[in-house]
Length: 211
Image (cartoon, rainbow, N blue to C red; front, top):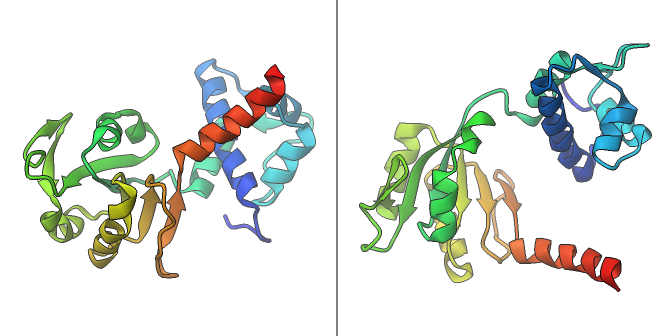
């Protein structure tokens, strides 16, 4: 199933929110949900829900709404989480260790298969089910474990160097937590998440609320 016209990034982000809500409803044994109910749960209008979903096709049933058991696999297919993705974490600091040990990723199709660092004091340490490996072994590991995604968890000054290493190793997807803009080729998919920016957005709204 593919989009028939350009899809705004905000709409793709909301697909993930719809999926989480649908999974919650399924856990409560709900069989159907309307666009109004789905929107209300996420503080969105029913028109916004319908608009987002129609980028990808028609999923509702007249007089019924959306069948939860049908829409969940359809959204997972659109988002690419109906398959398994092998992921390595580059940087065994506090954030890298926390991500590597988080078991919830597996439920969404993401398998953390390696944790790497350049610090000799960290190499060989156990973190959850993983052992910290040397960055020198990354290229071999990528091929052996069929890695598609690298999560960058190193300081800003090292992020580009580590990203370049990941790209040379054949990893096509980069998720960057370092507070720096990366340079990547057009053949690479890169997403950045600056936690400080997210917190600034939160404090902006909080300031308006509390003023």
